[in-house]
Image (cartoon, helix red, strand yellow):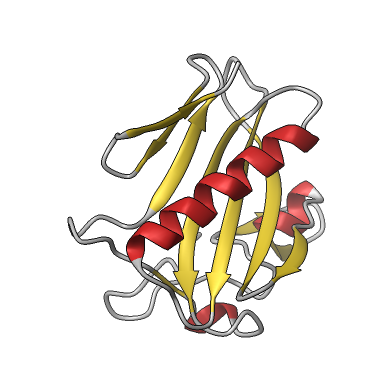
Length: 151
């Protein structure tokens, strides 16, 4: 189940989940993160906050992937955002024992109000993000431009 309001959605829930799950055995509705036991870690940086989370891949070949939400109260210029997203992806990879597919998303709004956060669009109209592909070792932006190669 997703929570939607008009055309905006799915709405993020208080713990960062996008989905709700019903547990028939207990009759309870939980957020997806509660169900999976996931707790994002949050790190304050100068000018922004980073939330890191690892999730399970629910279909074969299974495994995990990582996401970073980089939260700017006042977003800088697009080039600086892409530089920050790239730096945060590389930093996250340095801490992973096995390199995971890792994507960083740029969002704006107060870090304390998840429902008020909005993804930031780039000049091409696409939401700004930077993605590391574990198979190729490549870091690319939302327009598929190669930013870095990591082996």
